[in-house]
Structure formats: structure tokens, C-alpha cells
Image 1 (cartoon, one colour):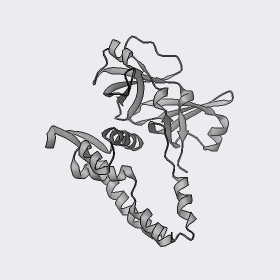
Image 2 (image 1 turned 90 degrees about the vertical axis):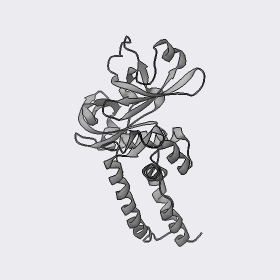
Image 3 (image 1 turned 135 degrees about the vertical axis):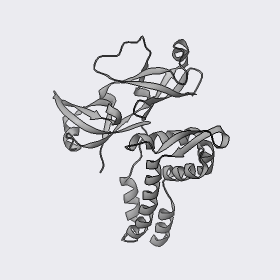
Image 4 (image 1 turned 90 degrees about the horizontal axis):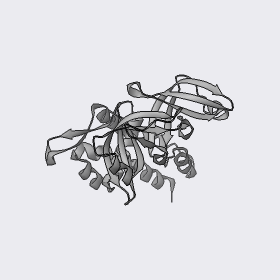
Amino acid sequence: MSLPTQLTQHIARRPQRIDLLQHIAEQGSITRAAKAAGISYKSAWDAIDELNNLAAQPLVVRSTGGRGGGGAQLSTEGQRVLRLYLRLQALQAQVLEAAEHSSDLDLLGRLMLRTSARNQLQGVVSAVSSEGRHDRVTLALSGGLQIQALITRDSTERLELAPGSQVVALLKAGWVHLLGPEDTAEPGSNTLGATVAEVLAEEEASCEVRLQLSNGQTLCAFAESQWLTAHGVTTGSELRAQFHPAYVLLGVPA
């Protein structure tokens, strides 16, 4: 395949999440936007959760009324980000034309990786303290929330972490433990109050629970169906999400 053909295809192929933002702006509905994007409703909401968590302000908000009695729309920030990307896409065409070899595009693709971690929270390092061979890194999230990560000293140095560093905290859904009102939090663990936004049945014995934090960011967790039933957990229930600092992985812009 010639380089010009590769460039043309690469430029025309927008990231799926950007396409989803465009469809939401046009459709005003997650269901219709997911269909237009060729993905499932659940995948669409997973993508929206990631976008909202990684942005300084939510890019997509639920709306009431309108067509079908409700849906979703881009926030002012979401509209701004979409406009920005469309402008960058035009500039990208010019930049990619400077590629000298066909392998250049493959290299760029490897440098921009996606992660399997369901939970991605944008934050700023507020403190770094030494604990033996490890460092405890305190992250300030939006809305006054904070979490801690426990990483090796080598990781702190390699990522060049210091107060003020912008980072993304990665956390697998299976590492998030739900606590009811009467449950005691484990000392030293991160514990965040949250509201149940949705409960999705994965199988008979287990469910995926989508949680909304007080700052608008979201977390996904898994819980046993029996535990959810025993605690009367439904949409709108108030719970706590607990996870150990050692489970928090940190990433920084390359």
C-alpha cells in the first residue's frame, strides 16, 4: 500500500469516542448515537464515562424531556472539545503529509495506546511521601476529592512525579469493593462516597455497578447479586467505593 493511500485512510478514520461525541450532538440520544456509531449502548456509556473522567469538566450530560422523553447532549465543554478536535484533524492532515516512511504511521499508533482499565480518573499530584521502597502519591481530583496511589520509588522517578504533575489514575473494575452504610472501611484504603447510577446484570451471580462520584466522575465495580439484593441496592442508592492504593496505576502524558 502506498504512503499517500495510508495517509488518506488514517486522516479519514476518527477515534471512535470522537465520532460518538459527534453522534450525540446530532442525535441527542445515547441509544441513537450508539446505533449510528455501530456500537452497543453499554459500550457507548463506557466511552462517555472515560471521556467525562479524563476531562476537567463533563463532556456529556444527561438531559430530560425532548425527543423520547430524555437523552443526552454535549455540555458547553463537550462542544468546545469537539470543535477543537475538528480543527486539529485539519492540521493533522498537514502534519501526516510530512511522514517520510510508511512505517511512521505504525510507530505513531504504537505510541498512542488504549488501556483495558475500566476506571480512568484525571488528577493532579498534591503530595509524594516515602514509605520504604515505595512512595505514597496523593492525587487531587476535581471537586475536592482525593485518592492515593502506592508505587515504587523507581516508578515515581521514571514518571517524574512531583506536586503539580498531571496524571491519570487507572483502576480495574474488579479492584473496586463496594461498602454499605454499616460496613467498616479498611484502614489505609481509598474510600469514596458514590451514588449508584446503574446496575447492569452481567450474569446471574454478578453485576456491574456504575457509580457516580460527587464531582461527576464515574467508577465501575463488580458486586455479587446476592450482596446487592441484601443491601437493597438500586439506582440512586448511596454506597462507598473502596480500593487499596497499591491497585491504583498511574500514567502521565508521553
